Length: 48
Image (cartoon, rainbow, N blue to C red; front, side, top):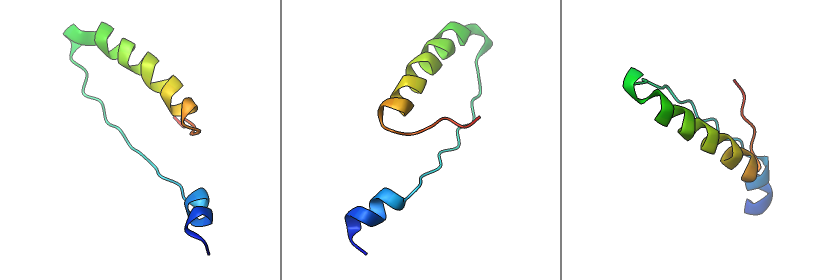
């Protein structure tokens, strides 16, 4: 199997655990709003 085909069949799962500072909730919301478009832009999907 070619490396390119193998790469296209691969899946990466990323698990994030957030510890949110109650005093920085606005910053966290900003971060999450930026994160989701990036996930889609790179051809992935967000699964909650």
